[in-house]
Length: 291
Image (tube, rainbow, N blue to C red; front, top):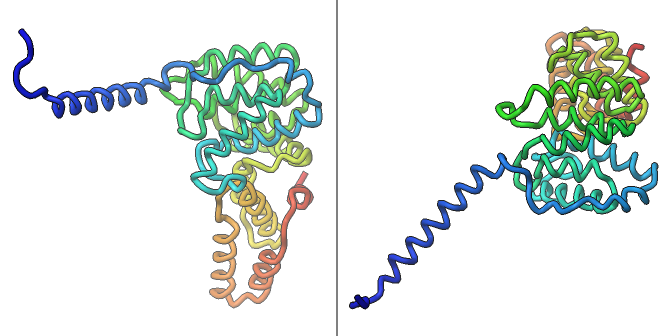
């Protein structure tokens, strides 16, 4: 029968809105369970044209941001800057840096989403078998950011094996990651402070200044009133604050000045003033650290 009476436009519109909202909610809740869409194919010709120097610079930049991929950093200090990180990694990919392309297949900075590891890990393994040490390091970096509930034991073991291989090959990021794990005794690695410290400092000598929480934790555990020990801790906290949104140096100065006032120590107050005036470099922190 033909419809009689006024057409129920308000009810239809409300139903359409409700249906759209439910569909979007379902998509958002399920999107991290399927491979990321819209990435396109990586251009291997561009990869061949990328110079070794530019690739090394891109590697260091990517790894410096990986552990803080979904939050502000010194490079991207605002919430809006997280979207610029996404654009930057896409530009690196277009320039021929495949590791950025693979990282974006797992991590979406501008939305905070984490996608499945399967295909990216398979590609990283191919690159690692071809001798790409950066790919060896990226496995552990991506595994560390994956959702715990969806992390396959095979991925963990694969990343562990290649991290060791990459460190043996002398890649600074692999040395940094392995050294940090050994210093802290985390992620299945037994605590080995001597080897961990050696690997960490080797990575720092190569110019890698990010993720120094292993070093700061190690030196803080050896806290003493010796000015050299205090300067060493402050130095590494300063390096940390140069890449990460951290206030460790300020909090340490407050602590030192509080102790100086409590003990009426002119020397301790003077040390706090000298530390505050000093702009520490990565090499200075390495030089302050015991071999």
